[in-house]
Amino acid sequence: MQQTTTTQDKRTLLNKEIKYVNQQNEDELKQKKKYILFIHNVPQDLETSALHNFMSNYGEIINLKLKKTEQNKNLGYGIVEFKTEEAYNKIFKEQELNGKISIPNSNISINVQKFNDSNRKKANRLLVLNLFEQEIPADQKEQKAQQINIIFEQIKKDLQVPHFKFYTEYNHKQKNFWVVFDFQYDDDKQEEHIYKTIKEKVEKNFSYSGAQNKGPSIIFKSNEKK
Image 1 (tube, rainbow, N blue to C red):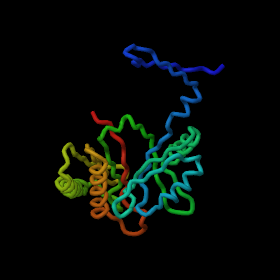
Image 2 (image 1 turned 30 degrees about the horizontal axis):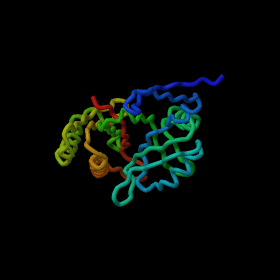
Image 3 (image 1 turned 90 degrees about the vertical axis):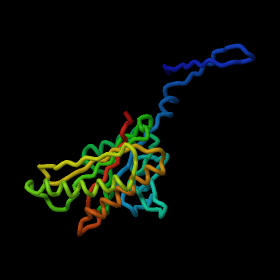
């Protein structure tokens, strides 16, 4: 038997309070659920249409948007909304299994994470992994840490954004550094400016030689404002 969910709302009609009843079955309610994933590590020149075609292999897409610069270059992140829960779970499980989503016949890989729009309260976090191409011996980490902090303190000064902070950490196993940026923003334009500035500075100061896909991994994460 189809179960129904009843919602009640009080409305006013001719100065009299009435109860407005809305009945929906479970299938209708399920259809209203949104299956949205946050995409990050998107290459600067990857066409939105190409990414759409690739992700359509997982299931029907309702919406796919990538954040762009004024020059129409990718800022590295965006969202994809699938029509079905099956498609949503399929791509997310692949991410959990392989640690990334690889696009066939290319050296491109992206990452996805669950997107909770209600938790996105104008506060975000950037995680930058593997700053250096070569391993940094433990006896050099203090010197490198000082160099890193000088660079990121300058980024902080240039941005002049309230509630902007960062911290660096040395990974003893990988012999490399990673850094976390936490910041708050007023609107999408400011958020885009912060991301773009950090990305440009990281690529300038920590760019790798060799393959273009090699370099620091910049991961954008929603961060609920406390």
